[in-house]
Image 1 (cartoon, rainbow, N blue to C red):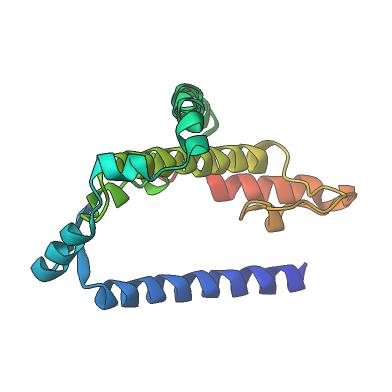
Image 2: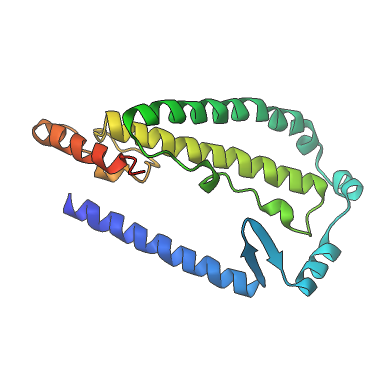
Length: 194
């Protein structure tokens, strides 16, 4: 278990390094964040506008298979939005009942790429769609991860690809002796302190 904690700490350090690198990227591409708004330096934004391809030429240069698939892609907005709504209702009802700290939806659903001046209207819409879909998936994953930590914080016997960030803390598969005390400890970590 100690080695697992060391690896988890290493991942946390790498995530911090990634955040530092993203800050350096802001300097390189000459923008800063003003709340949720991205602000580029004026000359950078003007250069971006010159790079934008108009919608009609963009559509004419698109592959037929991309155009044919568009209704199927955009049609996914209905189940994604429904999933978003049900996950939000679930956590607001159940997490309050269990005393679990709620997941901040806005931390996972980030819509900012549409602010890039070098994207045309369709590209901006696509970026909003993908940002929303992936954000909902990440948000739902965290809600479900907290649920799993509360109810069934036991690792699987088999290897799990892409396990969530809470998984490494779970009780080892087959460790019945420490399961109950570990469950109490992990539930305490989830408590809403507010």
